[in-house]
Structure formats: structure tokens, C-alpha cells
Length: 193
Image 1 (cartoon, rainbow, N blue to C red):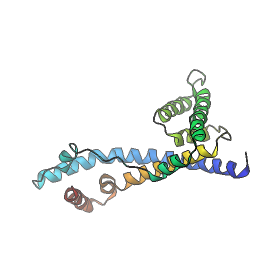
Image 2 (cartoon, rainbow, N blue to C red):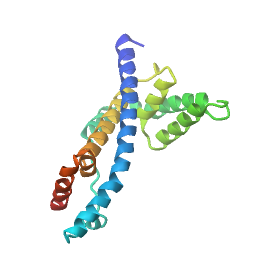
Image 3 (cartoon, one colour):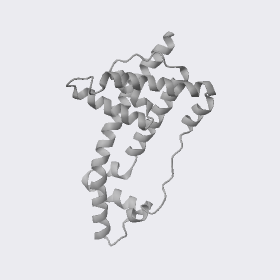
């Protein structure tokens, strides 16, 4: 493997691990903030005799976001590169499973957790999480092609967008707002719907 590719893979492994931790923390906070925000919203609407905008949202179809970077990468790959991607990522997954399978990893709770995370990541096609787990297990990824590296970069971009989207949400801002600012955020939420 050339030095540039080796450096690139090393950087991607570190970035994937960092984003995996950041996404996990973001989701944990968001899961705490949602019910609190919904409860505060229901109380506000009841107190001010307003309809709860969440009741209306449940009946509307939600738009699906498109990632132009991901589309660009898909367009730039040749058919041969596209065909190689699944086998390269299967190799990463297989190596992770071999190292963390509960039958082979005696008494290792960390191994079991990584095993379950790898299965979930493969099922959801989250390549960046597989790379993050591979980094944690110090698995060599020198076999990755440049096409696979571009796919991992696209997954990193998608994960960053997901984190940013959560952090721009009303529940997130409400959760971190000072107590005296929370009602204003709920008011803005109601007006935006």
C-alpha cells in the first residue's frame, strides 16, 4: 500500500471512531430530550389553549434527505469498483466477527458488544461504523481500494449530517436552553408548524 493511501486509511479510521462516539453521545442526549420536550410542549399548548403541532406532524409524510456527496461518489465509481465494494466490506465484517464472536471470545463483554454493534452496522450498511470497530480492534485495512475509501468518506459525510441535523432540532435547543428561554423555543416551534 502506498504511503498516501496508508495515511488516508489511518485518518479515516480515526475519524470514523470519533464520529461513532459523537453520534452515540448525540443520540443518547436526544433520546432524553425528546420526551421532556414533548411533555413541555403538551403543557404549553394546554396552558395556552393551542393545538399541539405534534398531533398534525404524525399524519404528514416526512421528506427523505438526499446526500449530494453520496450521489456524486456513486456516480464516479466504475461498475468494477462497485462490484468490489461489498467484498471489501464483507472482509472487514468477517475479521471483526472472527475476533469478537461470543463463542471464540471467552468472557469478553467488550467483544460481545463489538460483535453486536458490527452485526447492526452491517445490517444497516453503515460502513463507517465497521471501520471504527476495526480500528478499535486494530484490524489492518490495507486491502481497501480507493473506491472503498470514497464510500467510507461518503458515510462519514452522512453521519456528520445526521449529527448536525439532531443538533439543530428544537428538542436539542430546548434541552440546552436556560429555563427562562425554553418557553420561547416552544413558542417558536408552535409558530413554525
